[in-house]
Image 1 (cartoon, chains in turn cyan, red):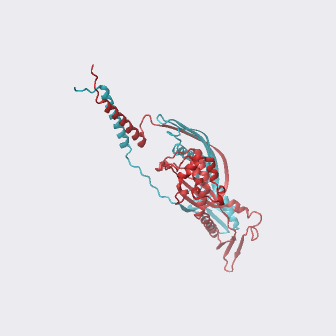
Image 2 (cartoon, chains in turn purple, blue):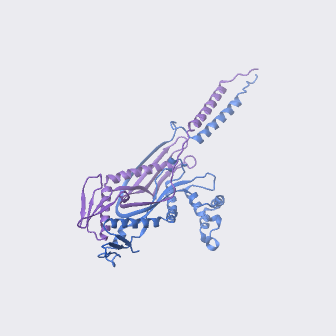
Image 3 (cartoon, one colour):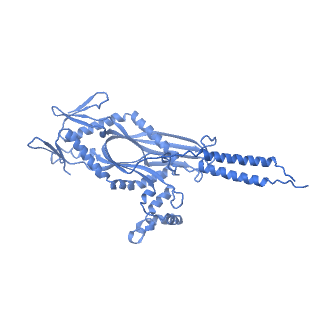
Length: 201
Length: 263
């Protein structure tokens, strides 16, 4: 006796085909190769950076993920950032002897060297995760640490850190030159900036 | 009444189960596409407060930059018996910590199986278990910098008029009129230690499960070792040479013919 296929079986077969198609789609969709390459070896680098100002920021960071499949996670922690600024002499420091024992100094403009999180200051206030299905990963909070570092850099610029750094750098150079018994020191602005002179002695 | 035959029922059910398993495997291996409506929704927020402003005078003259992979860069080329350490640790973590101390063992020396017990403990504390074949690792980019603290150096000269006796400064002029400055060079110190704020998973490395507390612990414990690696790499020697070279350039540009460091 010939048997008929019931509608229930048809639904089962269609459902199975849909699942296979979804699986094939997931595999094909992720087949785009991703390559990351970088060259960086352990190396010793020479610097000439005079750090003259440091600002410490305390930051609070909150991260939350709502995930239907793997469960929710959330995290709150604080940490400190150090923003340092000064003058990079490797970009050109000019010292010239002028008549009458005057020394002319031309320094590069001040810049921010680092806006870096101090990992040892991390204070984890609370954490909720699904240890097996959805644990907290570095990728959950590191982008926010980086973004806050950029925000702190901008805040430091807005607070006038560069002018503070530059005046401290001038003072430092002046004090060093005075060890060599130079008393008349004048500073001139670097090329490309608004002209202005400061002097001592 | 004859029972209705359904020869396709069992194969259909089997097909459905296999298809479900296939979809689940594809999801676990490849993840959900980004447009998926039920995909994760992330929220993040942060704010800062300025706590302190400090003036300083640190001339940084050398940096040792390194990219290290924890734990593998901290065991050298040695074969570590992670499974032995895992068994010991799982048996009694408290006793494991005591046995990680050389003083526990006869002669005050760690047996070869226990040489990397400290690294293994740190791994477990931050949620990595090299005793299991999951091969988790953390990539860190660090920079250790050295140079001179100009404030400390200048303070040596503030106790009086700089002379050969005070601060070791002297200026001599020879018969040709050439001027020589003799001065004590500033001592070189490690000035800063930076761990680059970088999302290693954005560079293609695995996104390792690690809480901020684990990250703090990892950096805190590895810091002395990274510093040691930088010093072994010649950081202080390079910083000293560059500091002296920089000061020589300043004083010669200002008019001295020779600069001699007295230390």
